Length: 305
Image (cartoon, rainbow, N blue to C red; front, side, top):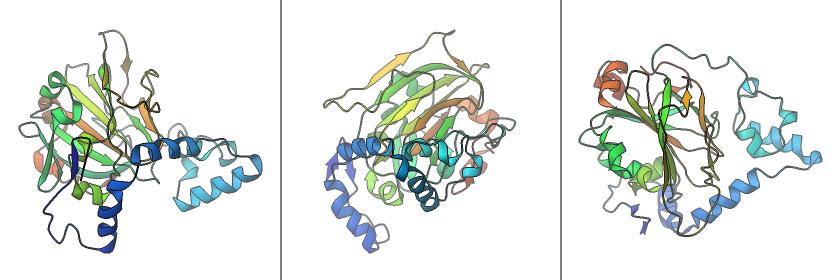
């Protein structure tokens, strides 16, 4: 079965499809109305809760997902919806910004390494292209021999994404797409996963003239992606037949500092960070070190390598 120019892989090995849960997901996930379901779950999560239920619901949610409320900007009593708690800001200073290029978010690193001939590894043996991810040839050309890091944010994580370096906003694009989950099953079974799911891509230019990109990839039940510096990109709207919308910025329009917020997920998902070849050489010591990040848990503001 296929969905929006991608779909389930065929001919997987028995290792890829082992286990009852994999078989169940392979049977039912393609049939679910993931787009509409994600929209309505997102809206429900952000509904203001009645006061008698609010604190009890917040505490239950925080316990179920092991949220670290000691880091939260506000006390749990101040949040008005589950979505409000989920997208919480942090207290000033709890994520010190280290030297050099830093990780843009709290997450587990799903993959990392060089981009070769414009191809990014999704998982061993499965690639997708930079151009497919960004849907813009001019932008993709900057990264076709660079490097990448794919970050997976689980519900426990802090869900705001920040700049890894000082950067001037050059280009942003909202790319409508599918709403496959971004869990281990999907990474192994949904071809071109990151290049077919809904996403918002941002490209920045450093003061030295290097380029990097942050691609915030949606997933099942991710109701919206919002940008901190441009409210016009509203991914909550769900008209049928949506088309890619993009925007280029002039040299003096928006400049952000390392550690400034770029955007947020209303629920968990993934971020693909791209570096052009020169930036990669400057901030990653070698290919082996970058690939060695695979599987590491990182915090926003920690040095990349």
